[in-house]
Image (tube, rainbow, N blue to C red; front, top):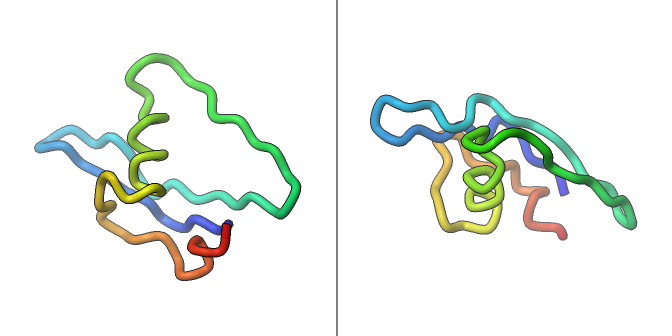
Length: 63
């Protein structure tokens, strides 16, 4: 899965700004950070709950 340039705003609050990462087959990654850092918002952009300002690349659909 290849995610490129995810950005998300709630009104004037920037929840995510240009987040990019990849996860290769059989690879395990973790998402850590303090409360309010945008971890759930990022996952919700990936799974389609929120629509990011810059959509994930087409290769993100290959999970």
